[in-house]
Amino acid sequence: ARYMLKVTNIKIPAYYDIGLNELAAASLGVPEYEIKSVKILRLSVDSRKKPDIFRVYTLAVEVENEARFNNKAPKITPYSPARYSFPYENVNFDLPPVIVGAGPAGLFASLSLAEAGVKCVLIERGRPVEKRVEDVRRFWETAKLDESSNVQFGEGGAGTFSDGKLNTGVNDTRIPYIFERFVNFGAPDEITYLSKPHIGTDRLRAVVKNMRSRLISLGCDVRFETKLTGLMIENGHISGVEVSSPDGKYVINTRHVILAPGNSARDTFRMLRSRGVPMSPKSFAVGVRIEHLQRDVDLAQYGEAATLGTLPASGYKLAVHLPSGRSVFTFCVCPGGRVVAAASERGGVVTNGMSEHARAEKNINGGLLVGVSPDDFGGTLFGGIEFQEKLERAAYAYGGGYTAPAQLVGDFLNNRPSTCAGCVSPSYLPGVRFGNLREVLPDFIAESIAEALPLMDRKIRGFASKDAVLTAVETRSSSPVRIDRGADMQSEIRGLFPCGEGAGFAGGITSSAVDGIKCAEAVCAERASNLRC
Image 1 (cartoon, rainbow, N blue to C red):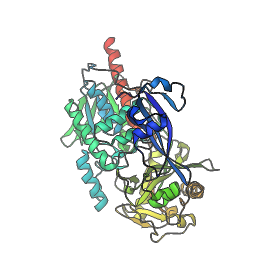
Image 2 (cartoon, one colour):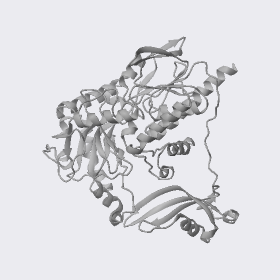
Image 3 (cartoon, rainbow, N blue to C red):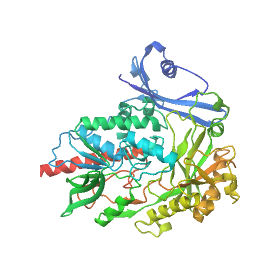
Image 4 (cartoon, helix red, strand yellow):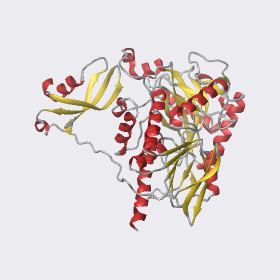
């Protein structure tokens, strides 16, 4: 369909049900028969003035005689969306580019190259998503960790066992294209217009598998259980990669490597340092998961409208800046979800959040994190990694294994150990050990969280409820290092393109996918430039 008008800020009471054509006609003040077609561009919920809760629409509308609305701005404006297309095709590579990591950055880099006619090799240290699901389930049920196939490593990246959240602070013309491609591969169409889009862990697994099928059909060589173990460098330029697989170690000759390792690839970071790849420490955040009853948060956010059944499970996004200069914020909130074990190394406890597309579970959880800067860990390159590892080992020791330390918010604020759950049952598997998180967390982390909780409770009533559960520790919110790159997306080691969240240039699925496409563009630009020379 051809949509000619964009109609913004259409507010409908939460309890009111109306068809799209009727809504478009009412917004334009025309009979419904004049509406040729309608598409939702954005849908959000406005709960700022409870008890009045509204659904807020932006629509693209095709209607008879659009010119009569030319002077109706700002609510009604011409609609002409910019469409992204990959700017290269059939660039000739004498050696195939190698993409390291099959998270969103690596997948979209590979897809961009493959659909442009570039034969490439995608390597992933973990397993295909269908096998990975079995490995993760086994860990959650038996505490038997597979260090190569877990919540952090494997096809789809860490986001595959999260919520499939797509909201981002990045503004980029590639984003609508990315969402459309997700829909092509099986994601729900609603992600193209919801203000807080998510695919859900259950749906995302099928999307990832379909992306792999597309890559293979285009001639992309996808290799699982294949880990990057070294770089071959000649005269300051990549000449190949060393990898290990179940079949042994071997070399892939290449002049272009898109390096998208994910933020948990600590062994990869250490290998890169040994090969002289420039890197720098960066700020990140650590803390706990906080868990409430979903119904309580819905009531706090929606008021009486929470009982209508017409609104999505509510989430939240909170941040406070303390007198100490610390920032405390919520991260990766999973409505109707659960807290999951996300360790990738033996002897450490890591938590994360996960929810399926329906977001139908009893609890809501979110990361409750404190900002950490290089000054907190000595400013050394791997000080942040060592800081994370120390916290993860402390949680493992306190829980007596992969059982996670936990405490009720009321007890945490009063500095007394918890002995059991209240009205909120912790969802973490393999299970929790109640106690005092101040024995696990560094003092400045615990004190910052304790100071922030009452402040956040002023923004969402009940956030600091005495029965809310804190589960420790969350350490993998973002990469503690950055693999340096220039404006041309390359490292000082030419032909090496650091990419995505693990390289320190993205945060979440969408921004990682954007960065993957940018790196694919940069690889083609570099190759095309060399061919012209």
